[in-house]
Amino acid sequence: MSDIPLQSTTSPEEWQILAERVAAHVRGYLRGLEGVARGEAGSRAVPLLLLEVSQVILAGAQLGASTDVIPPDNWEPELGPDPDLDDIRTGLAERLAPVDDYAEVFDPIKDTDATAYRLSDDLVDVAGDLIHGLRHYERGRPLEALWWWQYSYFNHWGNHAGAAQRALYAIIADARLDVADETPALP
Image 1 (cartoon, rainbow, N blue to C red):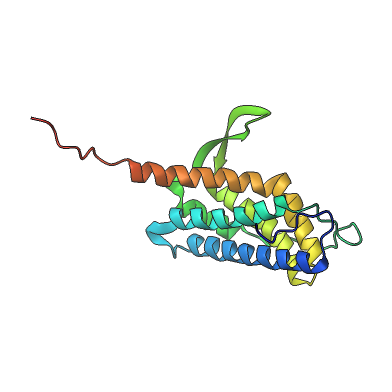
Image 2 (spheres, rainbow, N blue to C red):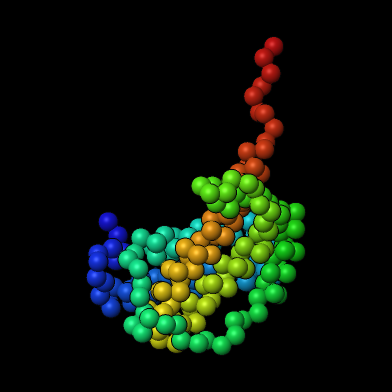
């Protein structure tokens, strides 16, 4: 069993441990995304993105398994404007151009129609939500960070990360499984 806070009352130390763990996943995701956007991953862009998205989904699952995070004052302090992520979005769109567009069922329970998505948009939307929480964390407000990460996981970034993960997986699986039949012909 992991040390994820699941009990009805979670100590400040347990929240701090979770906040540190999630912040580490967020930083790793952002570094990976920025590197791919700059072209540093080369032909390994899609597998690297699959790894980074999977790691940040692990953080989301930890948040989802935790009790509801309630900030002490039950309000979110102002952070100022969110950072501009257009350069990352553009870099990802360029690197992922042949596979950027895909279709996804947004909510397989309530809405079974396929919706058009873009990997570059999904990956940057996730980054925007994660950065918002990281800004709280870096200002010494781990509960606000956890609250934001948890809320936005259920409300926004969890869905986009899951959709991106499925698309990245499909791209890799298709490439790896699309090999010529190597079975020798029988005489």
